[in-house]
Amino acid sequence: MFRHTHQLRVRYSESDRMGTFYNSRLLEWMEVGRSELIRATGCSYAEWEKRGVMAPIMEANLKFTGRAGYDDLLEIETVCSREGRARLRFESKVILDGSGRPVAEGHTIHALTDSKGKPIRIPDWIAETLTL
Image (cartoon, rainbow, N blue to C red; front, side, top):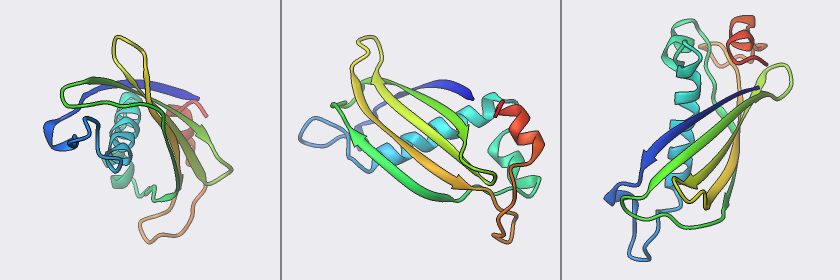
């Protein structure tokens, strides 16, 4: 299981008049966490694609547990684990930096496919970098 934490500041365009972030932003922040986790292994998602591996999202689950507004600094903790032979699960927790107050959590499940969309098993080089 590979774990990574990434900081992100809530931008003005991501907040609303209720003083919190737009709910759709959570999926985008989870994507940032996922991309940065993969990059932290030393092999970016762009490199996965160059090597013929795609990771389309198959499922998403979101839970909103708090608020975050403009200019708040967030920590996005992402954990990757195996979900069968051909899927990866990315668990994400978003907290306010400093206070540790929870903002949101969720997970996404991604099938691994070749460039034509045909499912493939998790390649050894991905399993090794993610310590699955």
